[in-house]
Amino acid sequence: MEGTLLVSYAILWVLVIFLSLLVFALARQVGVLHERVAPAGALMPTNGPKVGEMTEVMSVSDLQGDAVAIGGVNSAGLATLILFVSPTCPVCKSLVPVARSLVSYEGRRMRLVFASDGDKIEQHIAYVGDLDIKDYPYVVSQALGLAFAVSKLPFAVLVGSDGTLQSKGLVNSREHLESLVEAMDSGVVSLQDYVEKNMPEFDESITEKAS
Image (cartoon, rainbow, N blue to C red; front, side):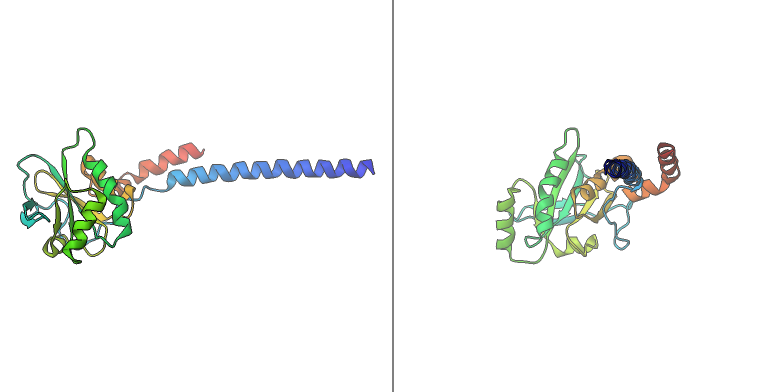
């Protein structure tokens, strides 16, 4: 009887050790896969103005009736981040504070403009009040959305201080929105473009870590 128990305990310990090694191996593989997954940037559409092209100056009015110039060379040397939103879009609401923090980052010369179309003006006014974005231009213009080929929301466009289109794309998360600014700061078209160009070095570094 005791011999049977000892054999059972021995088998159990062998199974525990085997399972522990298996979990360790799986955890290591998960870590390797996590490093191999490229960061997801904003989804950049192929239609509309191309990154690197000079944008045309558009004069639109905000909710207060003041003229807001978008595109072209900015005389104050500021880049312009345009976030297209809608009062009925829950994802847009979550990205508003992200956009505010991006443009207010220390040392970053950038202005923020919120844009939308459709819905009643009263809805937009209430939306601005709820999100406390009265200090930022908020324009309701279908023409502006058409100019940048905005088809889905939330959508962001980043125009450099020199008037060139720096980046654009559909943004569904903080990472997506940040990728547009990173694209401008790094001088590449998009985060995906950067990863693709540097993929050989990226794969080599991961292989070294795995070995």
